[in-house]
Image (cartoon, one colour):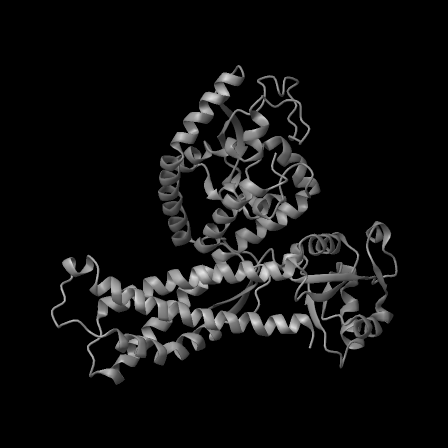
Length: 472
């Protein structure tokens, strides 16, 4: 048995054991909180003190319900670089369903009066304990992969820009769970792609190399004119146990979700629709207002300190106001803590900032690196000019340049611009990253918006602020 297979057995098994322990622990904690804490003063115990053993017995009886529910939501697979925010949403669903099913089982134990309040507490503690345990398991899984334990052997088919990104990312970040052995060419030419990469051969050599190198997964990253080779690749690997993963072409496959609509018996194919309906916009706006008020209150001491530092280290205004373009091409004045000298664009020509830019103030590079200069934009959110999450706003000067060279660039104006976005938390910021890649990620966000997605991006932004190497 390969090491990767052993890890895929042991990690889920350990997760089941820890999930079960977390549930039992939640029952015990809920019992003591309900009957031996200040809860008794608020909710007096009128029917006598029940025995803990009955709750433990019920917990053990219902453990299969929890395990089956979590398994039904595919929560016992190795995750390979899942963010804990994504995991929490599923944990919340599974915990809620498991509690409801468990309460239904009480019908068969009517001779013992279980406390309803205890089950509310069980839900709270189960959610807490399982989330903490799952966070530990994700860290443990990444630790295994970082120590090259349980990595899956993968190879990349294709030599385009996306192939290069995948190859470099998986080589650098072993916590994804993949060991990149090399790449296969499709058209017989690799060009600059071959630099410092292991060339395994062409499509003819695929079957032999898969068996010889024990490749478990092929990542297909094909250009539009290479897509015709897909059938040939699949055909050549018939009868071989290998998993295929096709990297979608962002521009062609995920910029719009195809929908079928029927009006008076006539079917219509909706290839483009409003990304957010009226209710979505209301929910997003309410969330923006409440979150911005909370954040501004929480960071007010930091804002005061930064204000003093900006004013004491350079001449000029505290805020830098710049005209940017947002939803439907509307213009507004975006606020930032000033991080550059007042003569930064004395020639009148806008230009992007860079890592070695000499226009920064003494404190400017620091606040730019950790995105502290963006904090005043929560005021823009309150006024309705921006959202907390959305494509980053840009100046009209650069928009007029980019819309001619970057495919679907203007699609980003279909929603309000944001302080942070899906592209930024994926490391796509700064003058050295691909503008087309940024737009692809922005469009993906627009087409797949949800409040949970926004919360996920916000949590990842907090992490990115302290660990990003591309922020400037």
